[in-house]
Image (cartoon, rainbow, N blue to C red; front, side, top):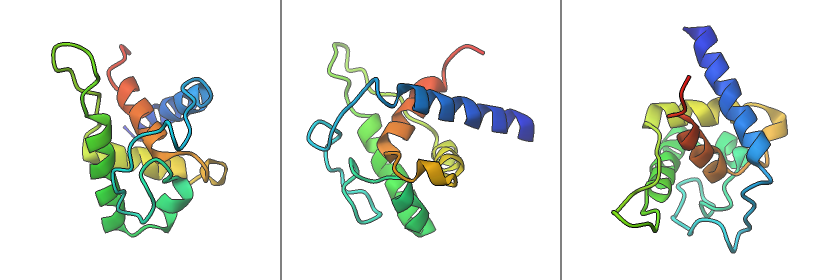
Length: 122
């Protein structure tokens, strides 16, 4: 069970690293400032901010990330973006952000890429 969780975290991390340049984005083109609970705009919140936050600030940030990622996709049929269960999202950010090299990783990018990867066939 622990090995499977570690493997899943590694897959998510590698996916985030592999795609880090593919989707690009800047603070102007990133997600709207949805009011991250950790004291910075959601599109600017990174792993360093995550590590500095309290558990309740982290939970508020997860809710803000879910609201952003689960918003309308802009296509027909009222489709919405992929989201993660709160516990999985918390664990994804915890596992990724504990690494020093991840200090600048944007939380919204980690979340949305993790959510998009969760339904891949195994």
